Image 1 (cartoon, rainbow, N blue to C red):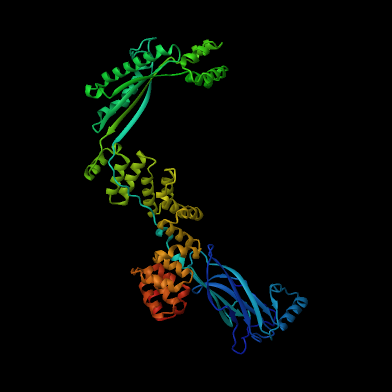
Image 2 (tube, rainbow, N blue to C red):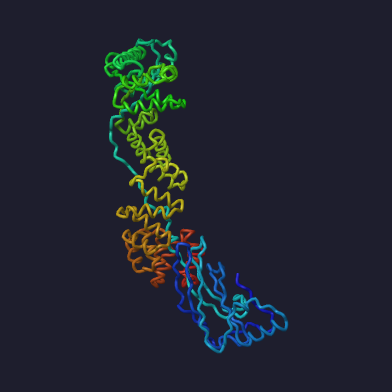
Length: 580
């Protein structure tokens, strides 16, 4: 609030300025450009004419920010003390012990001379306001309301960029990949830890955990063979030859064990002869590496000795390494504690899932077997869905089966952003991992939605040759009130946002030219046309276009305090459409 500085000293009073003259303000009333903090510096000079106020007076110049008729914020006052007022004020302080709260800040002047008073003040347009006017009330009692003797119009504040809904205006990349039918080959693997009678290779389900291990193999292969959409491509079973013993003996033994496991599977699964050809066997040496790993895990003190042998004879076969390991003093403990009792039988399998080729088949099978779809097929289903909710559901299905699908994550994030669910969009998008140029606009938008503007600027600046990146970068620069940069980026697009930014840099003629190429008569476009007309002094157009914008309640409220419309606020035509 204004500083109420009326003094009950018995000699101050509210006296009119003399001769009908007025305080001059230099420069004359102008529009201040706001920075990214919605601030601007008010820099004016007050020229107070000679004999403007009486020699017995204290003069107050009280600047303040108004929005319409509402006081928003008061700024420091200029306080001028004429000679007689100064003397009586000092006398009152001495004789009556009266304290003058303005004694330190007031300026002692000779009212018979012209006074030139520079004034500087940082002003802020609060969030939620689209404009305002800085007015100084001149008085001799400090309030500038009940007994003002003059009113000075210092500057206007306007923020056209607030007409831009940056989040809604961002260009987001919706990725619609080409649908390509590719073979859907899937694969799996496993290890069965089986026990065999020494030097034998026949399968004994009753030994150890053999039954459970064999059943695990069956559990992986049975669903494939039972699936009407799946075709078995290959099953390869590898016997792993023990490190203990002669490699020349163990290798064929391991191969025979793999063959036994294969025959057991074929029998149990009732594999027809036409499919048995897809089965194959092999063998490989296990090596002494697992023994060393087991010793290391147990903290065995002789782990280093075994490691040195394995390193020294790395280019030799298992028999050479075994020769030296058997001669270690700890061989007995190695044999008893760390040699594998079970023999590993490894298996790899692959199968092909039927492809779906027509849109009808895709939609039908999606409801039945989404697990049988490829990423490409699911993306095609998403394009066939019509509503945002349906598309979201498909994209979530894709991410369930293909968690690294950048297309699904990008498009789902776009849909969520359009619904204002930016936190959920970020969570979805961050689950994909690596950055991809195709998803750059979405990543930048997520930064904007979370007010991380500099990150968005950094990202988009790497691809300014991309029109969408350049446009989004221009929007962000405008949001940051870096208007000259924003104008250079957005001007080539000549859309409504480009026009608004042109107004922000007072390129009013250019804004007018661009606006002539926009045929839309939406309330926003009509409002911007009214702004342009006001700045170019085309009064009748202002009233015409503001009527076209008045259907939007938000714009109608804004017009009441829009600084550019100040000359029209008291006109009947204006008030009829704005205050209806």
